[in-house]
Length: 89
Image (tube, rainbow, N blue to C red; front, side):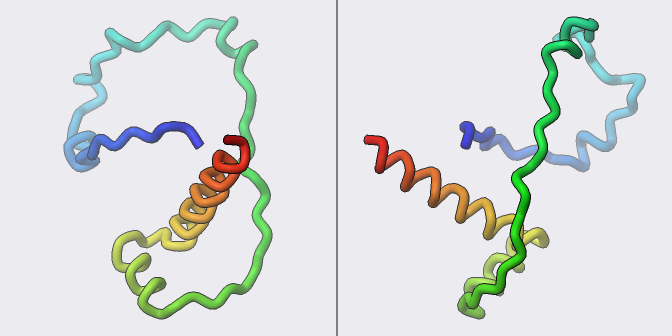
C-alpha cells in the first residue's frame, strides 16, 4: 500500500466553493502525452465469502464507517502487506 494522506478534509467546505472560484494555478496542463502514459487500474477482483466476526467488532466498524465491509477489506490488506514486509526482511 502507498503512504496515505492523513489530512482531514472538510467536504462541506469543498462543496461550498463555486467552480468559478477554483484556483487552477498549480494544475498542470493536460496534454496528449499524458494520455499516452496513462493506464487504467482495475481493482482486484473480490471473492464473496462468509466469515464470523464478533458482534462488538461489527458494531464498532458500522458505527465509525458506513462502508464497514470495505474497511474490513482494508484492514486485512494492511495485515497482509505487513506480513509480506516481515517475510522479505
